[in-house]
Length: 371
Image (cartoon, rainbow, N blue to C red):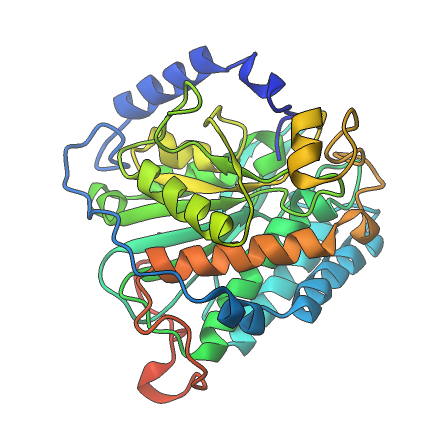
């Protein structure tokens, strides 16, 4: 998570001026690039019924989530205590993610990019991996892989990485066959300025951008004093609605959580995580968040438990954001929610069955555009 934010205080300081300038600059710079100002037709957000929650609980493996976090913690421990972009900790984190994806049958690829850091140019990369089945439409699940320099970043954002990676691995294991192509993205340079996701969207051709059904963002989803937030796609609870189709994405998340007895809190798109480039590019977006530097209210404590008057994550952007800082039960619930939303929005045929990922039904066979 790039900026400390607070709910509901997070609505008080909107970077609207920056956002408008970003959009104008992007539109002005288009030469066959992202369709931020394009009228190209975009596929409607299609839906399948989410799977039964009991099936999802069988598929998502808590031990897998913990294993991912342990690997990210080890990457930080062996490299100066962090996983910041263009460091040994980032490279070790990336190598782990790629290894896991390859073992599941994917062909991860690096998307290299550069940006100006505080002291020197930063050369880093995103990791992208696709399912092989599906139409020309693309559903992207994303989480930033880098941490801040001050700590290992296990909640921000090892938790999101673990959730997206676990969904990718379990879909391959289940032999899931999505009607939409599903792309798993692990962004670099988020903590320095959302650079990886911005580069990804900027590099899309008009046709590629128009083919994106939606983007699902996972950034900080294992907070120790958590509340459950869902991006306000239709703008009914904030001033920052997403592009057309984002309301449908929001409703999918709200319905899945409500079926589990969780009344999530919607909040607006204010440009502080990797959804921002997609929103500015006109791509429907949504996702999950469990709180970072904000203070939990009495109402939120009543709804979600935990301690009112304390931060959602008192180790946000600090050295204490280790694996011990992650609420594993919350991370498991958010991963299950992401899995259900992916089945619905990816229109996975038959939901989640128990077939092995072999033959024509192997959902992780890679193909598709490299953007």
